[in-house]
Length: 334
Image (cartoon, rainbow, N blue to C red; front, side):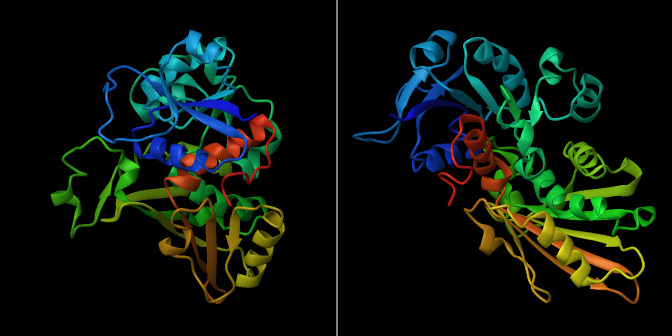
């Protein structure tokens, strides 16, 4: 018997990716949960497909949902998470609602008060490569942001190993496909603004910055982050610049990554002289990392690439669900 799980926000890019990935999962059956203004009739004729129902505590109990994915904006996640937990299902939240730990931190970066501060203390941040021990027992799992996933997987092992000269700062130059902005049209993400264009946004104020700081143990003054919008549909590529401690070589950094990620199924480290690109991670749950160091000057460049809709959202959410429900971590993702 497959275990039923719910998806709220299945019409968005991340939610649709969840439906697609869960369709090939051997252990779960997705239930599409409508919230608020859902259209009554699908435009597509289909002979079969996931069960669809209105979201309610009764439906969660009747369907015996083991978990519910919230592919919703933060305000909707804060509204719904408590009810879902009380109805007996675990929650995997793909928004930023429960990532930052305190109402004060949330208010600073999201520019609004947190509507469910009582749940913040319970929420478990779900970057499996660093938080795996806490995930199986979690009721409320906060799925990491896409930019911080790529950044933390590249930066944290080097901070832990003391290979970065933190006094010189770390610069993260991050580029993302347009799907990262969601499917609600705005003046910045419509076709005529994006095509044949390349632009930076939220400079020094991006709400994903505190996730990098709290996970990699950096101070805000040590980390400069700029997000930029690529005229493509999906993918994130981050070019990360820093100074190394004296005597650090490319091989030393690669050895650090190799030790840290030796048993991680979704992190791939590139050989010297090679760097990842978006094509190699598209539609996968992998994070690919490459590095080059100029030992003479202490300059280092790390390139980290993911698919923002998979390892940056839906794929990582399923990776977390697998850990929470006792499946093999790679189930449905390889």
